Amino acid sequence: MLQFIVRRLIVALLVAATVMVLAFILTRLSGDLATSIAGPGATAGDIVAIRKAYGLDRPVIVQFFDWVGRALTGDLGDSYFFKTRVASLIGERMPVTLTLGMTGLTIALLVSLPLGILAAVREGTGFDRAVQLVTVIGQAMPSFWLGLILMIVFGLQLGWLPTSGVDTWDGYIMPGVVLAFSSIPALTRLTRAGMIQAMASDYIRTARAKGLSRASILLKHALRNAAIPIVAIAAVQLGFMLGGSIVIEQVFALHGVGFLAWESIQKNDFPVVQSVVMVLAVIYVALTMVADLMNAVLDPRLRAG
Amino acid sequence: MSTAATVAGPKRGWRNAGTWIGAIIVGAAAFCALFAPLLVPHDPFAQDLGKRLLVPFWMEGTDPQHLLGTDQLGRDYLARLIYGCRISMTIGVTVSIVSGLIGITMGILGGFMGGRVDDAVLFAITTRLSLPVVLVALAVVGLLGSSMTLLVLTLGLLLWDRFAVVARSTTMQVRNLDFVSAAWCAGCSRFRILTREVLPNIASHLVVVATLEIALAILLEAALSFLGLGVPPPLPSWGLMISEAKDYMFFSPWVIMIPGVALFVLVLGINLLGDGLRDAFGTRER
Image (cartoon, rainbow over all chains, first blue to last red):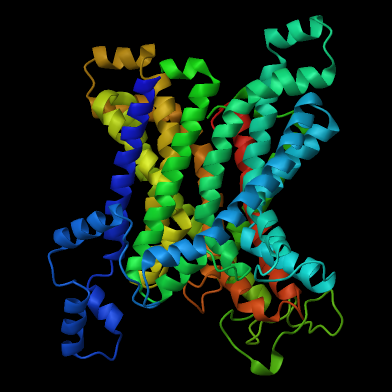
């Protein structure tokens, strides 16, 4: 078990390191950063001054290790546009994105677990087909468009929910539903498949033979086994949601990390962009690692492999 | 990759209907994309400020000249919709080709060679999955300026993971089969075995992945264009049309309904066709 954890940790660290390199390269794609920060009207003198002020006159490799070295101590540098520490900017915005992600995941699980379980129990019936139809529709739904439609219906016409901002808790409902929509198809399919497989196994037959109630068989025995891949996928989906929330934060004007990234991209604020990419990627790496470890704890068979 | 046979679905008849609906939608979209200039009633770029926000045919006060009405600059909505279909299809197919070339090459090499090569491929897949696609694509386009070519290359470089995963796992299943051993014994080169023996035998799985990737690329392009960092205006990308019409949606909801429904129907059609192909080929990869 210890060996498994150590090996998994090493892979996670290597991935995180590679992502840092990629995030750094990403922001330097445009060539000369000083020129783009200075803007079109700048003189040659301005550009030299900016290059010096931001340390862009140093060799790229020195800039990289300087950034990495500071990042490891929690210092992500200064934002050019917001004139403040990048780390505190991200720290301020992160609660909105995390709340949104958790709301989305909760809604997704509340919808897809019952749907998946019921579809599995009634495999092949009209209900099962209806659930499959829902997953196909969910997969094809453009999230930003769904967000706008919900805004028109529930915000404007019915007046039930605020159309933008999260001054109150109900501001998270619509964005959460939209975010959940992207994960519901995968989670529902997985739950259904896992339950069908579990229901066909010997221990369920034993449980039935013992005369256990239907609910007990379903929830205590079948779901517990089907839950292993669901837990793993749920963690991964949360990672996707945090990364993908940029579109939804933009639609609903939620000032989370995604919105921050979008603003910073428009403003050429590259220290913020590279840091947000890195932070989101590291969160994803951590989530997948936690998922793998939970899998190993829940299913002893996985530890060997 | 795990959901396996159980997901294959309940009734065949129902699945077949889905496949046909998908095929019809994709066929119609391909037709629109190929013959857009012949189909459009008006120039999709021609503005007419005297005819702004005309309503579509099912509403009162419509102009028979403009079946789907006009946008905020008086441009014909039907013409823009048809040209938008061309943009979506072009991006979907070209992104899928770029990502397919990268992903399939990596997947086959990893799956066939095993060992260190496979470790490297797996590591690349893990790293790629940890990158937030929308954010990275936005950053690249934001820094380099928006253009169709850049968008295709960026998405192509980001969406190869599923191709690689499926190519890798299917190659592993094929590599120890008798016909591959026979080719080794016959003295075929590794390149010949990979391209002539392995690739044709995993191709059906890859076609299914390609349909899913086309759908994904179309949705991503629309989202990026919606955020203002995808296809540059005045090109009538559906995402861009929704973004430009957003300010009018509370008064004229149809301005975002029309391109949104088109986007949804096209992606739905591609996914239905992909599901149908998966069933028809008997492949089990997601």
